[in-house]
Image (spheres, one colour):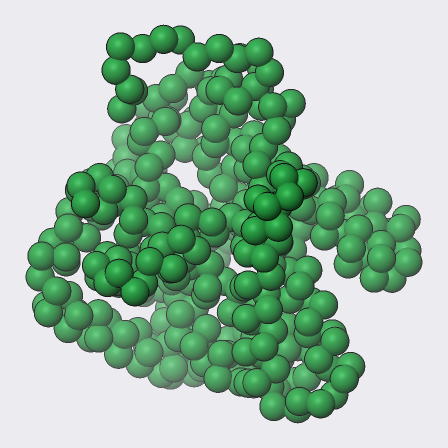
Length: 361
C-alpha cells in the first residue's frame, strides 16, 4: 500500500468514526427527548462532546489545499455548489416527509423549505456550513490572509460567547476554526499520523491517557447529563474547550490511522468513504424507527431502544445506496447530475476535459 493510498484510507476511516458518532448522538437524543430517559449511548456521546463535530470539520478541510488555488468557477463547483445541491435536495425531501406527510400541513412544509434557504435545516446544517466554510476559506486565500491570522481570528470567535440567534453566524463562529485548521495544518496532521503508525504502542498509550483526561474534564465539576444533551463540566471552559476539541480531533485521526492497519476494520473505511450517503439520509429512518418502537411500547429500556434506532439509522442509508446501485434509479440522491454543475466545469453538460500528457496531481 502506497503512502498516499494509506493516507486516504485513514482519512476515510476517520470519517467512518465521525459518522457513527453523529448518528449515535441524534439517535440517543431523539429517544431521550421522547422518553425522558438516559441510555448508555448518552454517556458515550457525552464523553465525545468536545470533539464530535470539530473533528468532522477538521477532517473535511484536510485536502482543501489541493483545490483552493483553482479559479473561482471550478472551485465553487467543487466545494460550494456541490454541498448546496445535496443540502437543498435533502432539505426539501426531509421537510416534505417530516412536516408535509407527518402533519398533513403542506403549507407549513413549503414555508419550511423557504426558510431552509437562509436557516440551515435540522441535521443537514453540517452540509450547509461546509459550503459556507469553503466560501470563507477561498475568500481568505484570495485576500492572501496569513494562516496564523485566520486561525487566530477563528479561535477568537470560538472562544468568544457569540450568540446572535442567527444560526449560520453562530455556527460559523463555533466551528470555522476547525475546518480552517484542517486546511492550514494538514501537513502537520499527516506527519503526526504517520509518526503514530510507526510508534503503535506509544500512540495507544497516548490515546488512553487522552481518553481519561477528556472524560475527567467532561464529567468533572458542574456537569449534568440530560436526555437530550449534556452540560459539560470543566471541558466547557473557554479556551479549554477549544484545546480539547483539537486534541480530540487528532485523537480520532490517530485512532483511524491505527485501525486502518487492521484488515478486519476495512468496513469502517468503506463506511467513511460513503459517509455523505449516511449523513444525508439517516434522519428519516431514524425518526420512523423511533416512532414505531415507542408506539409499539414493547421495549421500555432507553438503551435498547436507542441502540435499535441507532443501527437502523446507520444501516438503512447503506441499503438505500445498494438498491440505487443495483437498479440505477435515484442516482441523483447521492450523485450530482450534470445540470447541477456550473457550466464549463467537470461533470457539466458538454464539458470536454483537455488532454494531458500525465495525470494531474
